[in-house]
Figure 1 (cartoon, rainbow, N blue to C red):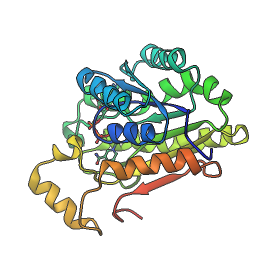
Figure 2 (cartoon, rainbow, N blue to C red):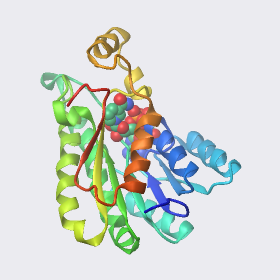
Figure 3 (tube, protein in one colour):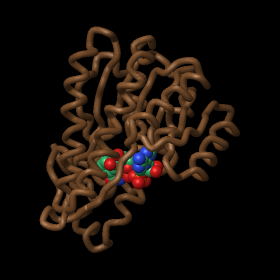
Figure 4 (tube, helix red, strand yellow):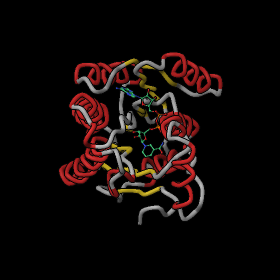
Length: 247
Ligand code: NAD
């Protein structure tokens, strides 16, 4: 793709944090965006209004992407509204951090459902449309925690590492079709998810980051646009945007 003008994207969990930055960055590149939300209706509607006020096109679509039927609904609504689908950004995610000793089955399953099963749910429903696109893109927002592990994060780490395996295998299967599949692995990014970490723990994390700061959501969003726009020969990769914390 030399330009993203007129392309259609879905961003799961696209109304807050990193997802919102991705939504804005895609829209500012002329992409029509379906902003998926689960419970954040107000922020989804606000971002859609903002995009429309700036002359872009966007819709808000409610769906809990951890359920296959709701993910299908998200894809169908997008196709009905915009007639095509070129870019799928699997961004929706949650944490339920506990040391493994204290981790109950519910918190294990929930985190796997939202972070990993959702990727199967949306991608399987989107595949036919992505194959019809000239240069379809699947971009999975994984995490440094899926690469390096994280204390109290066996559930999250397993889900995010699972996304990386999925990315490489699907990239192999689709390489001949022109659809690329990549993952972005953010380090610690200044969003609600990271600001929920106690301040003293966060300070210790920042002290370990070679660049000595948290990342900005916009820095992840620009990675998404890069892969979407200039990534025809990049597939099955992990783009690490982490301030040098994991190399
Ligand atoms: P966030 O909590 O600000 O945003 C997550 C979004 O996902 C929210 O909009 C939320 O409503 C949505 N969501 C949650 N469950 C959903 C569901 N079942 N269906 C649909 N939407 C759902 O978090 P964030 O920091 O912006 O994280 C975005 C992604 O980046 C996540 O996948 C996260 O794991 C990943 N990530 C974040 C960081 C970080 O430092 N913030 C680092 C690495 C990876």
